Length: 286
Image (cartoon, rainbow, N blue to C red; front, side, top):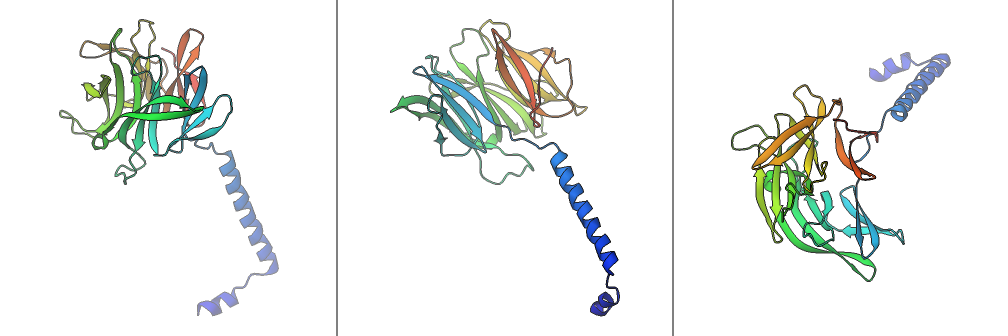
């Protein structure tokens, strides 16, 4: 019956031409929409370390860490294990930066659209036969707290220990809601110790964080990208005060889309910038 019906309603040549033209218009319109739509760019993280008067650029892309020699421009993988985040900081205070990484937890994530880390791993970086070689000095499986971010800095002037920030996605003793939480640790040269593992910096949800010394006193403030209860985003500044963080000020502007924070040196000053996934960025004003 279906076949007979199809035969009775065969398209004329004129109808066929019109039909094909309609398909062509739809296809062209779809292609045009895809081309004109802003593409979501992957966040690529870059760090630079200088060892024996030679610069090396470390780039984290597609969960893989690559190293580029500033002289030869040769790019090669540095670590085989896939990573979620990384940073470089002189945690041993010996004048050389160490490599700190958060490895990727490759098990299935129950949180849609999010990936989490598995291990904290710290490496010293040495040059051998003109090749940068990482040596593991510390590792710790922290997958139970769903870590998603890793940073390093110093919260107190003259403090002997480096402070490590780990963003985690969990509930806490006093708050049952699972959300982003700020955990801070101190590196004592052998392992990390808990410094402050709070539920909130404020009642806005933490999205990203950077350490930055804005006053030049040798202690870092923290600039925190937060999502407000209205669904907008702002950058707030906090400083460490005795046993917790003291709120200082929020950015003049609120943002309608999520981004991430980065620091940019301009002469003697360090600027805080918010970067969006369409490659646009702007300086944060307070």
